[in-house]
Image (cartoon, rainbow, N blue to C red; front, top):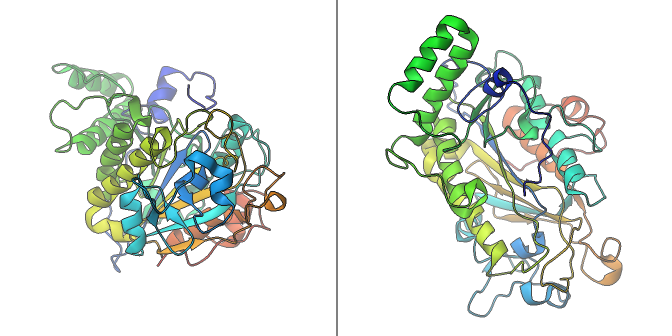
Length: 412
């Protein structure tokens, strides 16, 4: 079941113009690179369902960790040993690419992080995470789109717009700024000259939609060319499967790497709600983390020389309980992790004011207590990558969040 609250069903024209599988809001013109050759990209991956940060990046050095997290706690020994990051934290063994990037100073972790939301509703938590507002109920625009809007109109990042990956546009990138929508195999490939005939029809009847359709078809060809063969298959399990995450990243990387492609992208993967049989080093969660790890790898390969200018951030609406439940899973919690990757990241660090896992140190005696604000991380990335000021970030991008200061020096 998808955990995304969808808006009322739009009209056919609205679907074509707001991020349907192959369509775009606006034609994206070509522009030359900046003279200094720095061409920053920002990719936001939303993990819907609440990621267990204690099983993604385990505090193996905390003496209370193994007792609380029980059978799904990570360990540095055994047949599925965790991957050491430093002397205290270790990555899930399903994430060897992330661990490699961490050792190469191209990945980092912000641990014990959460938004300002302190309830445990998926719908409200995702609303807060993606809208950027301090509370739920704001579902019209997302903080990433407002960041694009806040850039000077003449800047290349603003003029090239954003990329939304998936069958529907994630809330985080909805808004007035132009967004190209793409999803692998969300629609069957048109037979024969159907696409040409439909395009010709729109050129005579609706020139605006014709431009959008042409842009979408061009984007689809670019995203799929030479990566999945002439007849790419829709991955079993959809885009939220391990194979689907890889495929989504493959196509997105080709579009983002192009000189005339978007510089900002948003992807959303469901399925992280692990109440039952979560697994730790192996099992359901490890499979999902392996898919995310594969997405990091596909971005690294697909972006090529643009990897050095790229920052990727993976975020989730809240964490999960520190203690496992009776069905060897975890329930809705609070503190979790933010994962950062990319050649632009000042990596090799786990950034954490670690709160501890003793009963008195847990939030409401059940959750990892948050000591960092996810908005601070996102503000820091936007400031470092695109030069947005703290005032703009605190007023327009994340309204009424002036007290949350950007976390600086996340970008090398």
